[in-house]
Amino acid sequence: MKKVWLIIELVILTAGTLATAVAQAPANVEDLRGMLLSQGERGYLVGHHDDPMYGHDWKFEEGKSDVLAVTGHYPALMTFDLGHIELGDAANLDGVPFDRIREEIKKQYERGGIVSLSWHADNPVTGKSAWDNSDSTVVRQILKNKAVRRKFTGWLDRLADYLLTIPQPIVFRPWHEHTGSWFWWGQQLCSKKEYLDLWKLTVGHLKKRGVSNLVYAYSPGIEPKSTAEYLERYPGDKIVTLIGVDAYHYNGLDGTQEFQLNLGRMLRIMQEVCRTHHVAMALTECGMESITDPHWFTQTLAPVISKYPLAYVQFWRNAHDNPTHFYTPYPGHTSAADFRQFCSFPKAIMVK
Ligand code: BMA
Image 1 (cartoon, rainbow, N blue to C red):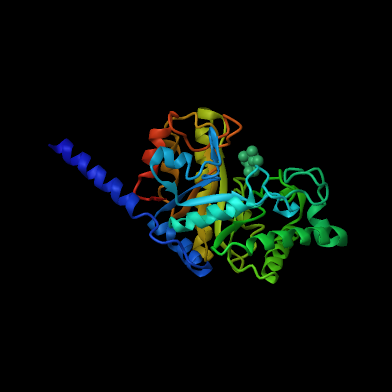
Image 2 (spheres, helix red, strand yellow):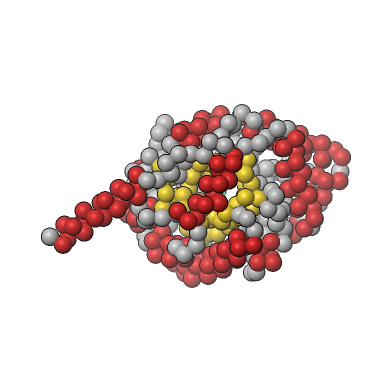
């Protein structure tokens, strides 16, 4: 009998949690800001990059999602990347058409969810990718060299043209992981002032072009060791609404302790920042590639994040063309049951 009640209770709890997911998507940028700032008290939106675009072994199938297939629900946050919008391309750096991103944003808000966009912009000096860190004068040249500045503001115009076609309020997360030095805007590639001026140029230009549907996210990597280091290149509360961290679990089971220590330190730092700044906090990217630990979500990640008021937890993408590059399980994967459990925790928010 007891067992039966326990099962019924669990079913009610699970159904209740999932049914009370985000009831209504924010209608405008003020709603989104308000939602993010108070979201942490209610629980974290579960997020997945490129979720409805492709998965472990499929691509562009209407309504499909690996998260949906495993949990029965869509993630409440979907994230997409605008890399190559600056080139005037029809599809982004991972082959996802920008028209399709616009359509999926609309669908996600109809479900009651939200969207965040990142931008792996190419290197405007060398013409290579965002990861081309061969030249440490790129940001300076954007700011000081007339020809490069003209080229770059042209890129911002293309970004603005696209954003102006999106009516929904969006979390925009440019110049991310800048505390590392793998992107052309990274720590060793520009000075503090140059980095901050890059932000100002970006935000100012988009505003000038009439883009008014963005709240901005600041998302360092796990390099900062203190609040001061975390805030070293912080653009300020007037620009930023949400602070985060991009934290990945490397080295399989051997890397568990290191991941938990790094993530724990970053979350403590971010909570400290939230005490003195009017911002929300989130895990802006995370995951364990290939999820070789079948209990990673409930036993490695959950214990570290459980006591923090995170607005969202965003898992990276499940590539369709690289069988080991995935961060949420697909049906049949050894971590599927664990992820399902993680997504049914009372604090985890999904959408129908
Ligand atoms: C990286 C990898 C790449 C991808 C890039 C931009 O982390 O997933 O395969 O091209 O992000 O989305």
